[in-house]
Image (cartoon, rainbow over all chains, first blue to last red; front, side):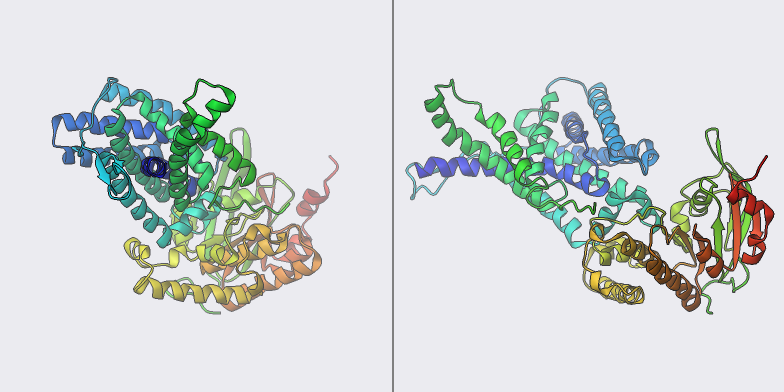
Length: 306
Length: 266
């Protein structure tokens, strides 16, 4: 019994890292503007489309570099055309702006790149690996493509964590998120900060789009992967990079284990048709968390003197 | 009184001049042809009834608002409008009427944020917390500790500012502005909502900053006792128009000012 559970756990953790990566894009922008960027999923789709279509006509690495430039240019355009004009507005106004950006990107992406299902070929190994064959009969199966993807994500997450945790940029980010005017008054260049975080979260979206695209194919539904990041964020805390990582791992492992362990129990007790627990488990877990610890595992507590 | 290094302007010269500035929000004319100057080293008060345009004036000076007409001359450079970044870099610091602190951050981090522009190491170095950047961070930390001592708030340095009572928040906000080592300090109602003792403390800090650091101060305040005691010169606004400008005794005796404050029978 232990073997299959471990196998499920490993598979879940590997998927969880992919969730973390998407959640990270949200955290970056939230840290720097206090705004939940609804457009993150659309950015993932847009980046994946760009990469898929460009790699049809040029070598993959060149396409990747060009897509990265496109995402940086997109960040610049968003800052210049939208955010710059919304300095010192309420968070909800900025949120609505990201909603607008979402629909624009969804449509614009399909106008430019087309709306079929495209493939991204990373050339990942396909044959499953078996480990610990001496301990478990038949060993534990690991999908090498997932393993590679997880390593890429882990590196990306580590680089970003170092960038924002170890540096003084963190203080400027928090200042901007807390109060636009006050940040400007001490000379923090609001526009540069926003440009930087949107560019970085654009690059994160590109990596997420690349990996999810290789896994599922590049299609509209990829932008819905971002919804899986929501419970991750609630669990980990909207402002915490380590939170996004741990939250992703918990959700990834949790939903797979729930499917394997909880599902049969529920079916037996309630005489259900079964299955599908994987689809809602994460959200229920997030709801429970909201009741117990609304700021998430690592989020900043909201302090307000009344 | 010493002038900060690199500044050619000595005490008594014009540090900032606002020339025929007009500002409107749609149909509301917040400022109409307002001109006045601030001299190096003085404490200059801006007073007037509610809605007179005092805060709008400060916002024009530090670039939050861009006037439709007029010009602003700061340290000899004339501009049609300031931008917040230019103002901060040029040495203008400010506090806000309704306390704008970084609420989730500690007192120490809030005041450190005021050092942003003083950190000269390039962006790349700032990313590294060792080597020259670490030495710089330590040096800035020392300056910030001096300010914390000066404002007599060492006991609260690690507390998130959101938890502090209002009077102390105002003091922290002053600290953040001081951390910028400003040439011109704009204070928007620094004593609002304070009790007598807190007002006296704050008045003392304002005078000390002006005396010890030679910082030029422009302040908005409603407490007339405080204004008359502190300021060298006072400009009076009413409905966006300048109605008086002069020393405290001159302004106190001015009939237009008295009418503006007390109302007048038409």
